[in-house]
Image 1: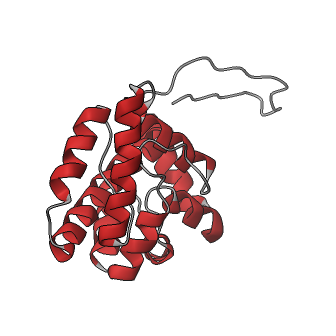
Image 2: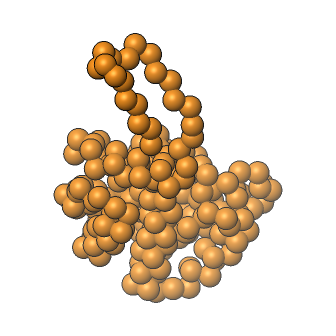
Image 3: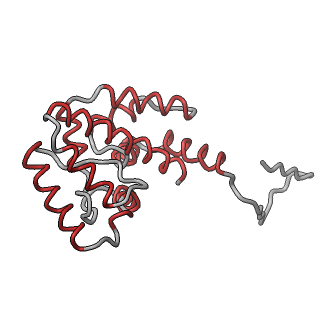
Length: 194
């Protein structure tokens, strides 16, 4: 905070204030920005977190948040209201594990690259196994293999893919939804830090 008083009241030609916004202040500014965005821009910001139009519309309709607890509650309510088709729309917004991000906003592409850092420089045999696994998974279940990749190595993601191939489709859908929720919560954190 800064307070400037001028006596007599004549205005200021130039004023420079030096300082840094601390992490809490940055989060408060990001939240105030989300509250102030026009609906289309706010929806785009939330679509970067979870690529289902219904989700983004529901979260934007809950504004103004005024605080992080209200935002988190709106996110959870919106995710709870999504149907199977909404989740499949969200799944389709992700790049396959090991592929370069495509489509979506610049933020979503950037976050996907960060999340999949564990597959950036992997042996060719692991890359081929991931590609083959992605294709087999999609053929079996009808949606892309989705895993919260943050902090995971390519080998860990490949092992999880191979283990999940044994799930029945209904159980695997629930697993994929939970992975998508983890990704959404992490991306919301990134949105608040930006």
